[in-house]
Image (cartoon, rainbow over all chains, first blue to last red; front, side):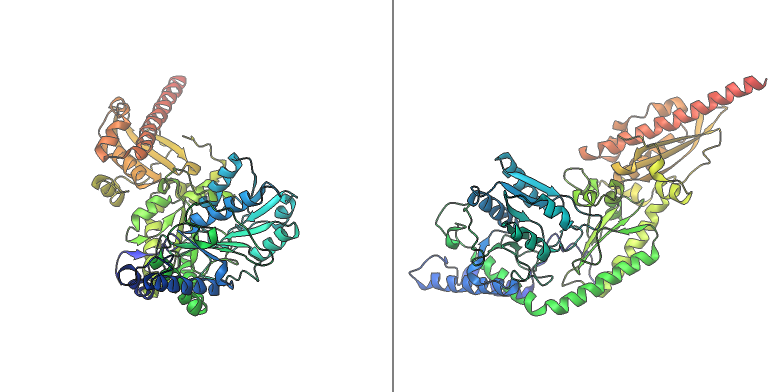
Length: 404
Length: 137
């Protein structure tokens, strides 16, 4: 076993060597521009792009023409929200999303609000899921788009997208899902799930960074978008810009591998994640899982070790790469807004660790991580005045703290 | 973010971790911060009432590595100082000693607050003891 151990696969994943191998010729040998229609360099590149387009489509039950390549999920989210808002502005000006969405959705919505659109940010329940009745109640005749993520990037919970899309459709609204964390990890089917638009990222599924896609439904209904990038009219006019051929080939290969290996990988990820969870929970008291375990990515574990601050825990397990919802680890010095939205209290957000297992993690690594985390949590609790007070039976919620 | 060697040293080998009996009249206890802010420091001093010298100091901290290091360092500095000398410790002294980056300055502020709160608590207690003993006399 090699240190450090990477267990932060919701942030990014390593490129699968098979993906890397498929990409390499497109940098140096077959480097053509897929838009060059009059020579073989262009044709070879175009063939590669079309093959990848088919591979991406097949993973999610779509057709190749419904895949628009982008620079990644942030761009896909921007294109979906801004493109729909602009195209359907005459129909309505209301968008519904959720408080726990990725910033690529939330900040795009804020931008649209500045431009005059109305946005409803649905709260989530303590389990991290959207309440369907609250969604129904929020729908109006002016609602043009509902955008709810498939799987959350922090707590891994899977939203009931099939039910959500049904509710959107009943009122004539489109349904977009940021499926960045879900595609390639769990079965996503745009037909069964009733998805009209879906954001896809390569680097979360063992493909390269800097490439992604937007699924745009072409039938029942045919979704139209106003392009957000002006230029040569690539990607059926929806996204101008020379195609990132090696990146697209990598995304395609990553999708093909995910499709072929998903059922086995789900079993392996669940086994490792459940083992990690069982080890931590049997050895430590006052440990809380954030978000429902019932509807969750098989590779995610988000757990709060009460009375221990997240950054200090990361410091103690410095040979293990994971992330925390603690304020001290965020650029804004605010604790995770996703965990806050669960209503568990900021203190549990400060104490949270996100484990993101991946294709290349081994059982030996999981055992090492569990042992190390248990050891460091115990040490830090010896240092924690809160743990001491808890052990003395003091109710910490009733203490008069000196806020600063 | 990279931590300074001194922060790492205090984090890995925290000095004077523990608790004194809060009810001991010679012990002053300061508890500052709040769990929802992500840091709580408990700092205690044990003062020799005859000399006014802090003979021992202990801490427990819930917080990031810099908060742990700041309070650990504070206990080291407190031992052997008089109560008044202790009050002269400034957060900037801690920042300089531990090479804390700007985002971690609040950890040093919290440590200074904890020192002041502990000394304050001790002073209040000793005044009360004085009042009581006069009342008994």
